[in-house]
Amino acid sequence: MKKNIFVVLTFMIIFGCTQQKTDAKSEGEKVMQTSREWSQTAATGDLEKTLGYWADDAVVMLAGQPTLTGKKEIRKMVEESFKTPGFKISWEPQSAEVSESGDMAYLIEKESISMNDSSGKAFTLYSKGVTVWRKQSDGSWKNVADISTPEPLK
Amino acid sequence: MKKNIFVVLTFMIIFGCTQQKTDAKSEGEKVMQTSREWSQTAATGDLEKTLGYWADDAVVMLAGQPTLTGKKEIRKMVEESFKTPGFKISWEPQSAEVSESGDMAYLIEKESISMNDSSGKAFTLYSKGVTVWRKQSDGSWKNVADISTPEPLK
Image (tube, rainbow over all chains, first blue to last red; front, top):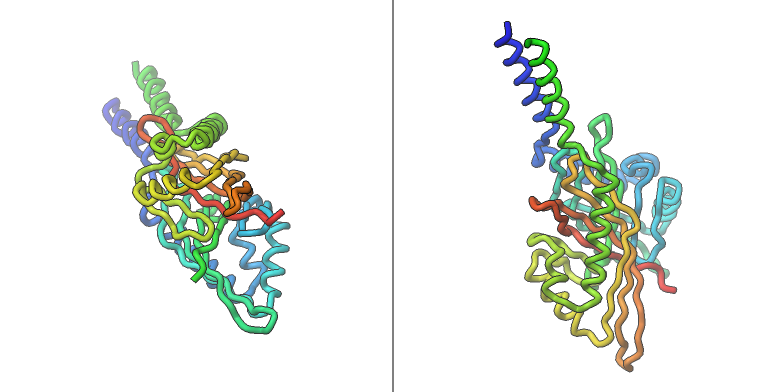
């Protein structure tokens, strides 16, 4: 009986601590897949679905624009972007790093934004970025910090 | 005796798991303090000390420049920056978020870079940024991703 208690409690100690460890590779792939789906969603122009990938207190930093903090400011920027003539956005994660506890992660990303100039001719801006993510209680990942900066002009 | 075993093992379960938890506030303050010291170090123009804050595999993303990956590429950029006439850099962390396991953190930062134009007159560029950090085995924090993007022109 005493031996059984030891076995059970030893198992509990190991299991109780091990469950906090994360499979960083598969979790990182999950965050990258979320980012890819987000890019596809943004390409459809669906405002609500696109906004759904950001956490309520997310911070967005774009070149030449003031820092956007929270859903209200982000919503305004996305609405205006989707209304811009010829607007197209697309990004692709390059790599993922996940914290040991599996609650925080960041991606290195590459991005392109196209729009029309005043004569109606399309042009494309290329940028690189970092996105930081927090795992939610339901296991999904939401973006908490989203920053991009221009690539050299081609 | 059996009761004592229970008490000890229950304590071990609780302690064994609790020790992985982090004091996010004090750890976040530590990362911000590291960033402040880094800014002060960069202001002195000490190349080696400035480079010492980046992890060996760090990624640096600056506006209009290709992504820099690893110490060799970063060293070249810092060397060139320090040689630029009138070069001055300064940044200040605004807020910190730390992962539950205390091994990953990110800061929201504000930055200014001054240099001289071709006529020798100083000008300043303002930017905002995100820095991502990994805790090292010695308890110190090193930067693993460092990205800034321009503020609106004033």
